[in-house]
Image (cartoon, helix red, strand yellow):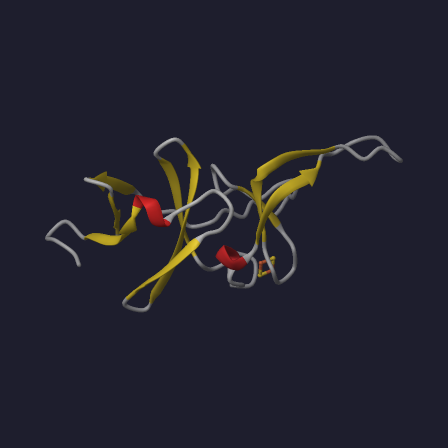
Amino acid sequence: MSNEENWYFICETNEVNYKHFKIVKINNLEVGIIKVGNNEYRVYKNSCPHRLGPICKGTISGTFLPSKQGEFIYDLEGRIIRCPWHRYEYYIYSGNILYSDLKLKLKSYEYKIIKNKIFIKLK
Ligand code: FES
């Protein structure tokens, strides 16, 4: 469903959680939506900018932080999306790739909530 401003209904707020993306198809576009805070969400195209893997089917986890040789510091639990294809990691809030010179970023979409219904804007 859309209106003249290209806002598309994708789901109800109670269908989205912190652990997994809810994947929704709009015409030929597949997007994933995930909860990241109280009434705060992120919507990303289900396509990794590395080699177009289904990023929204990746795991949500933490990661090992850069550290000294022989040190292993695990942090950021629940804030990392790990691509299922080549395991590149992206920060869930910004969509930016972690610890890489590649400068990759997930394609995100603006959203709005009206009476517990989530709409995204497609240009
Ligand atoms: S396609 Fe996602 S890391 Fe390669």
